[in-house]
Length: 322
Ligand code: SF4
Image (cartoon, rainbow, N blue to C red; front, side):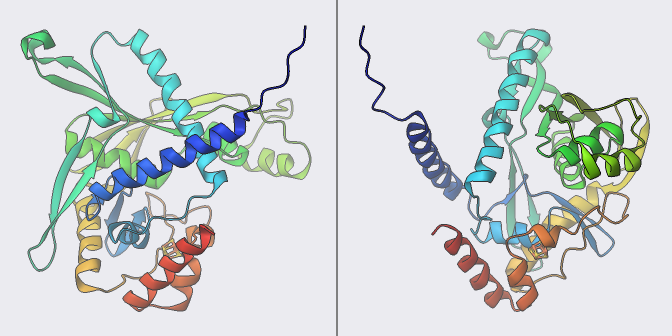
């Protein structure tokens, strides 16, 4: 028997598909340009911004997305795979209807200084629900959401160690999930999943062992999931850890609305609000400075002028495509 190897390349096809999907995604994004987005959620705590950097949200509002390289795209793909796995399992486990992303849209608006309204749009990952009055959708019954889910994947081993041994949600994820919960008026669960099996020898492991108090006989980190259940009390967000312990935060419904109003005001007044400070949901210092990992860092280092900043970040995005 003779069989010649395939002429077509699997990776070549993958790349072609990815480029087309990116093009379609950009086309779709144009339709919501000028809207503030749920994926870029933050919160004002006094004068301090926590969550997603307000300047990054402003860039998006101005139609400038942070550059996405092939590595980041692979990570996004891993996120989609994670969502598919959740979907498969939930459809067997939940005894009511389930809605996903495109079927769960939400919107509200902020009013900036001049009285101009800017729309905030969002699409949570999943909502588990019931048909109105226990009825049948064929009879025109409405979907009533009961619980929302927001999934995140853990892509680095150091994040994996932190989430496993010292479970703490990321502040931007907490603002985003809290935002959806408060606007939908239902509880939400933020779930992290780690899909690797890391064996980390040497100094990094020694350092992590010390930091997270990992027993000597543990030699590797296995795949795991961790969830944080979000609740609200008098307009303040708290969450329950996987062990059911309650943790109060400084995130408030009012602060989330103020964050979006701030971003809309920045655009309207053509003024950059002070740089992002990298603080956690309790205003403690974040484990790292987000600015050090931000593609717009050089623009923020060089200018505080609104238009010059916009031109610089536009250039950064264009150069990243070359
Ligand atoms: S460098 Fe810092 S302040 Fe500037 S856009 Fe990035 S995260 Fe925000």
